[in-house]
Image: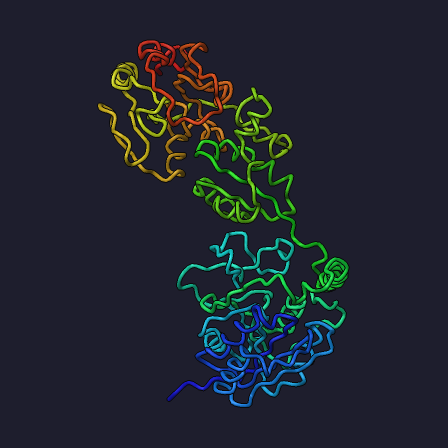
Length: 520
């Protein structure tokens, strides 16, 4: 037996877009796989008689063919879209109304998909309404929660992951299907009707009904700059409507919508940990806000509560130019000399830690964790003499187990006891917490240790990067000499030559380790 769908009235408001986007919207309605039972077109513009126009002779012919006589044009009173939507509630004879803007082009199966979500407890169902000139994937920051309304990132504006099922939201935007008998439009809004959809659909939710987004139902928004509500002077109208909306928010108990804080880490793994050191103070400063972290290594913040993680692409989509968050540009502009971790503190204006962390200590275990490389052995910061240093470590610490960590594709050191490559970051932290001490080049490991609840002292083998900028004073920082430091400490690394002579020799390294950390 064929599925029986409820009848739907389609409503279009139009103003002076007769020969731009309105023909596209009307044609798209005629091509729906599930046709509306009726179409009402509110002409809020010139009230032009189009019956003699060559283009509209085809459009009207198509409407007659597809809808029969179940369509009409209403010359409206030019009071704006809200007045027309209110009028449609009394004109329609069906329970469900499908509102479409005159610059919307729904794909052929939109109405068919929307009605599939109709249930007794559902008040409104919307699909995606995407700008055809700015198609972007759904960012982590998009939200249809009413408290995030001022974030300005409606989930309906973005392509969702393939296969995502319909889901509940607080409010809907632009084009959607809704239940006529429970709908109430705000009559206080101006002719432009700013926030009308939000007020109406969130009102449905407050009445106990569910609003739904079906990401598979896509309507293309052609954002016509001519005609429509843009024909009205927007400044006072929008300001008036925003004042009305603010009163609604207060009446709803959302007088103080959620504020947002943003962190952008478009940099390396170690830089993420250099910022993470300040998380307790950062959250204390921004305790009443919703936090968005746009990062390259989300695993660093795994398990951190009350944050929304997004990509760098999300950051650019949400914030535009993100140069103001670039820690290296910030340090260059200020001729920074105090260290990477302190730079993050200043960039994000984080107050001092209320409780100082425990003093860094040597580990309690018997293992020595070795993180030998910065990316790869041929990187200018990678220590080159591990084949000579490992036997010296073995001789001085015969009861200790030497364990190499690193990426899965990094070369294995010879004569260590174990290679634990590609470990999750939390597992590396566990190894460090239980080790005797650790050894690395200038890579992520020292920053991970510094961000830990309990800091375990280690050894960092430096060559051309400056430990005063990128290191921590409680570690044993072994630098052959400041004369070997790279002049441009904040520059990019690709193309910078590798020079083994800038690193301290293994016999000096082992002597420094034994003198500082002993052999017991």
